[in-house]
Amino acid sequence: MPKLSWDQAEDIAIALVEKYPEQDPTYIRYTDLHQWITELDQFGDDPMKSNEAKLEAIQMAWLEEWKDAQG
Image (cartoon, rainbow, N blue to C red; front, side):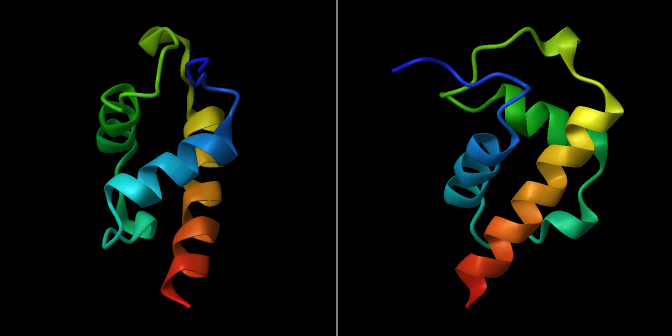
């Protein structure tokens, strides 16, 4: 299975919901978000290739996935 990259916001969001099901993504600092993403087993991109726009896109995708999971 190919590793996740920074451009796969939705797939990263799904992995984050699975790993942190109780975490509300609204209140995550980008520094923590970056760390959590790079620590995902499925993640394989260069940690230095992230930027604020990519982190924001992932956070918004995570928020949508999290809301869906909450019912």
